[in-house]
Image: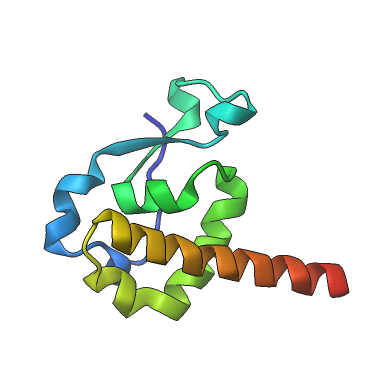
Length: 106
């Protein structure tokens, strides 16, 4: 498989999420033609996979680093249930939209 998402050790998921670490994600999402080939697969936890959704890997990883700077404690303490994943996804989406707004106004 490809490389895992690489984030600082203090952002690793809580013990409750350790079982969720065994998911595969597509660097180039399937909806954009990405295949399930070794070079297109990365390892990540389920919460990261769901937050990333169909975003391309190159766009997601830097923005997710910013997201973790802002929400690190909340993210680490979160339970991997759908309500929490939904809340985290909305916060990530808000950050992504604010980045786009800043880029378009520059």
